[in-house]
Length: 248
Image (tube, rainbow, N blue to C red; front, top):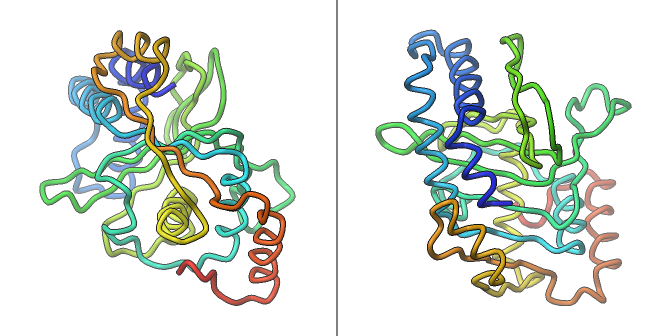
C-alpha cells in the first residue's frame, strides 16, 4: 500500500490532492500564493518521494485498540518536533481506527482511519502537513472546508482529514496531530515493542516499481497482548475520570 500510494501521488490524481491542499492553505493564509497546477505537480512528486523513502510504521490490531483508547484522553497540547517519529512518514493500521470527526456531533458517522501520512515543509521545516486516509477504491472527491472538490480515482486509500500545524502551535482539535502524539508516546512506553522487516519478496517487487529500493517496515505491537483488555480498561477509566492520559 505504501508503494501504491507513492506511485499514485506522483501521477495526476496525486497532483489533484496537492492542489486541494494548496487551496485550503491559501484560504487560511491569504499571504500564501494560490495554488497552480505546475507547483501542485512538483509538490505531489516531492511528497511521493518522501513517502517512498519513509520507514513504514505498521500497527497490529491490539495496538490499534490501545492507540484509540489512549487518544480519547490525550490533552490538546502543542505539536512538538520530538512527537514526530520521523520528519516525513507513513503509518498503516492493521484495521481501521474509528474517530469522531466533529466533537459537537458525536452521533455522525465516524471516520475510519486506515493510514496517516505527514510531511514537514517550509524553509525551516517547521510546518507539518498531515493527512488521514480511509480505505477506498474507485472514484472519490478530494477537498476540504468550503473549497472545491476534485474528482480522483483512489488506489485503495483516499485522503480524508487534513491538518496543517506549525511546530509549537496548539493542536486545536486536529485528529491527525493528536493521533501522532499518542502513537509516539505509546512507542516510547514500556507497553509496546517493535521489530523491523524488509517486507516479503512480492512486496519488494511492487515497491521496486515505485522506486523503493530498500523498503523498511517498523512493526509496533503491545509487548503483552494478553494484558490488552486490562490496559484498555485502564485507558478508558482515565477518560471517564477526566484526567490526562499518562502518555502526555
